Length: 411
Image (cartoon, rainbow, N blue to C red):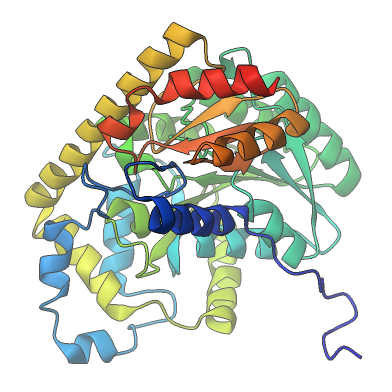
């Protein structure tokens, strides 16, 4: 007998990331950190392997009065000042000629889940990149939706033809499109689309929207670790080309930006040509927020607002030091990967680099072979994710050659 609804998925969750993280920790406890390469942790770590938590963020958070930490937020849509400053932080400095609304969410995950649940009916299809964060599919399944994937790469650039084909077919089936584009600093490959690629996506969806509404879910969780710094937002200016049939929802994460993964604070930023359409989106999102999580941590929003206004210079200096470290790590890894011809998806910037593998059977064999050699990675579709965000330079040194040797031995 089950007390859950008949349509509930009763299979235990298989979170491959947390499972392999636990295995790596057990290996370190048994054999010591020097022998183990733990390339699983998707959080910034310093050269000693300690989690980075910015002083410019947490020194102030520690001094927020308990009454503010204990208090409800001003609204289930988020504190007004937080919403205003998120809008300023996320969007380009040059104003976009679009209607805009910001709704506070528990991390970027809340924004993604809220968009899927609000835009698609049960039984409809969410469009994802072929290589993607696994939780997108889980959220779709919980909403009663299926998924279709577009091939992400055509050699070393975005596969626009595949994106067009999948979106066109889904539109013909259900009369609307919701497509996830995780950019820039794509998780897990580290790819970032060019302005021309973004313009082509917008122009295509403008055309497709003649058949039905189109929504771009732009997940920017890692944008603040772009090596291009402020220029990372330049692509958003092409959103000014949107017609009335296309809506953009940007999923923003304070978790990554502020190294505050556990505070669960983020936002959904809705952009559209028509004020009425954005207002309707806001109303639906408001109700979803109220019914699902009710309130975002008040102190987390207050802290973000203080950091990006009162302490911005110190914060950006500390964040830039982390970006510089990421660049050094990625440069070393990529240099050595080229020397041994390690197969990789195109990497531009960000937390992760991913080995490109022709099929998942080869991936599974290699993943286990690496574990046997005390090297821990994360399985993704057609690849293995390597978290350079948490690997020291010493751990990266020689790692590509070891990966090549084990891959060749595995076949």
